[in-house]
Amino acid sequence: MAALTAAGMTPEDHVLDIGCGALRLGHKAVPFLRPGHYWGTDASLALMRHGRLTELPDPTQLPEDHLVEDATFAFPGIPDTITLAIAFGVFTHLPHSALQAALTNLRRFPSLRAALFTTFLSDAPGPTRQPDGVVTHPDRPPYHVPESQVATAIEAAGFIATRLPTLLPRGQVLWSAT
Image (cartoon, rainbow, N blue to C red; front, side, top):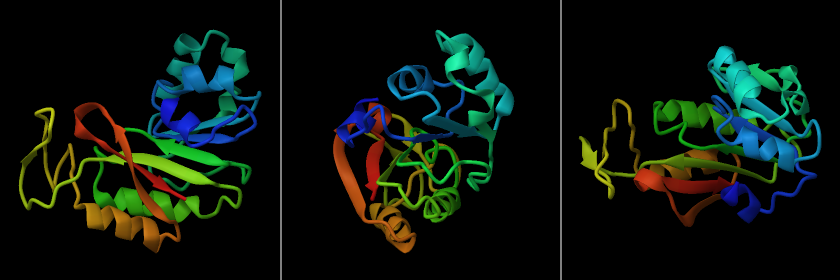
């Protein structure tokens, strides 16, 4: 929530929570946003449905059809009204091609102001110990990528890349694609 509010989120925004899982963010965002303004995607529809029933104080605040199973970042059925997107801790567990696909597919949202996401950074061709001790890899989870590769992917998708100064758990870096 802090990252989204720092990006200017208001209750009027339409938020896409990419890789929302059991609604770790959704249980806070749904009550904050106007009704119908939260959408979540994840590879597991069952996990999202479980989160809706167990994490939300009032599950009726989130229509079940606002939870979309999507393992390829195609964003099927998500309306064009999305103004902010966030993928927290998603691309640290997937190959860099997933980030490229997501950014490319986010371009279809005409009102999108910003997409926030996290990565681990390293130029190392092998394992890297991040500041908190977690070991990341270029070829398996948790993944790291060179900073220049992230910036290039953002710009190739037609966005402006900004590495945000926010300090995140486990040494993750927060990015904004605007």
